[in-house]
Image 1: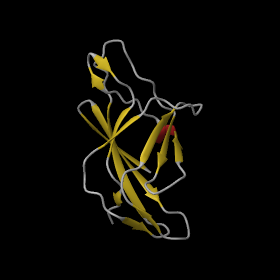
Image 2: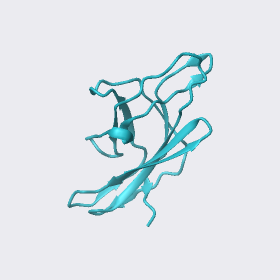
Image 3: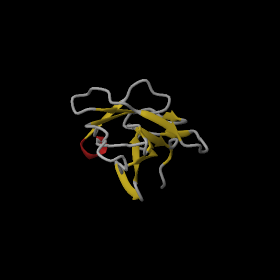
Image 4: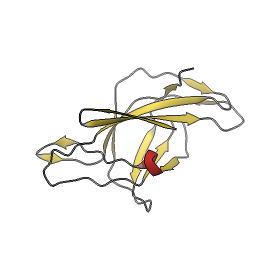
Length: 133
């Protein structure tokens, strides 16, 4: 599940992770992210951890946790542009397997750097937190 917000020149997305397993799992910290093309090729991705308080989140079957990402969505770089991802790979904290999102949830075009030095794929991420009840 994804919720999208916007601020001047940036996009904030909140992703929800749901425990579909039969056992309780524990999450702590920041998820890993990788932008992928539509064909699954890795795109340049720089994940910056936004300083925030981390907390242990225990998820029983069906419970959820969430995290937010923020990225610049405006060019400001003349004719230069960054690639648009076709997929987003998310590795939850404490996990060895990733989830790959397609469609609108996996489509990002993050910019970064300065107007003189464009850097594509910069994403700011928050730590995982318990979903509001």
